[in-house]
Length: 92
Image (tube, one colour):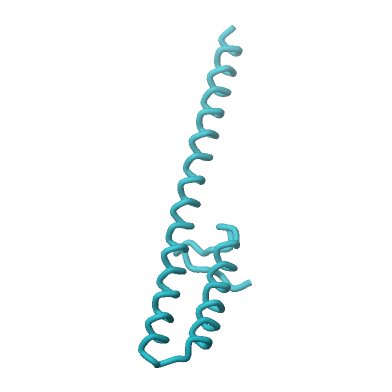
């Protein structure tokens, strides 16, 4: 009986921990995507301002902004395991 009770407690602890870990990972991913979204909007605004000031043509600004956003998107699709402990991306 004590063995069965211990097994049940360990199982309950494992299941609760699994759900908490899942929720934590979900929140981390959501925050990461929010930051990437903000970075993308910042890129668009930066190149829009350059085009408006005449420093770049509109076509060049769009081309450069799309390239940077494409790179940002590729970084966002890499799994977290590809990042170093400092949060920077490793080059594979």
